[in-house]
Image 1 (cartoon, rainbow, N blue to C red):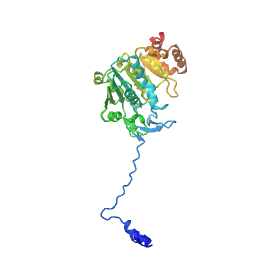
Image 2 (tube, protein in one colour):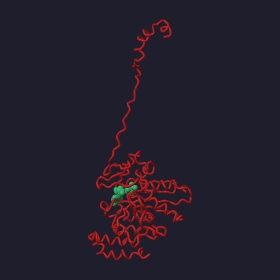
Image 3 (tube, helix red, strand yellow):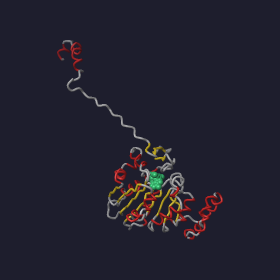
Length: 325
Ligand SMILES: C[S@@+](CC[C@H](N)C(=O)[O-])C[C@H]1O[C@@H](n2cnc3c(N)ncnc32)[C@H](O)[C@@H]1O
């Protein structure tokens, strides 16, 4: 080639060699890998679909009821402030307690359960002997919501952990002193089953997160709250997103002490309840002004009150010990 350049014959040589240089090796032809396009991940599964809140966060919506899980706030923030906070505060009140049983009623997209797990695993005493045993029990009748979330880890940071995979595969996850079990099926049938009550300790903390009373009516009446009251430990506390006067009446009639809960996003209050009065929540306890509100709502919604009047409910409500404190 050098010679050809010196003799001024490079172009001649080039035209001669070029077709051979670009020739394929017929015995070992080069293979250019075809880039596979990732299959589109489904945005819906069974009764659930992805949706976004105004801040652009992805959420899970139930197509049948039209209800969205953690719809009004950053879901992870809400899970922490509303549900995990219940355990955080209970730990401070009772640092000596060795075992905590926590019911996660309505696993849904797994925000509340994973919030609790993340809290425990980032606790300074996690892994120490001093950290209590945590027995987390989730209830869910339709696992498609968490399956859909697991298909989109990019949209749901809370799910990027081995635990939800294990929970879906084997209904069980354990790490350190935490054990997480999932009961699949109707909550009321599960907790009414003798085998469940024989094998499970009473809940000390309840995350009460079913859909609203329009969709999940049998979670929001006196009978429902009386049933979980009868199953809970004496130091049990419960948290829920509802602020409805009607739901608070049902909790009170079932015997719970009822408090204003922490604010959550645009909601300036939520609801907490306890079996034994909690001194530290004294200032949030519903007081006489709540009863005045009940009287006013009676005038506005007489139909609602017919039933509880018939069951002597108003009398029982006004005589609830928390209003004589
Ligand atoms: C508001 S979502 C729960 C959101 C969830 N806690 C989270 O953090 O993502 C309510 C859940 O309750 C479940 N559910 C409704 N009725 C139920 C029942 N009878 N038994 C068990 N789960 C039920 C629904 O399938 C739904 O996933």
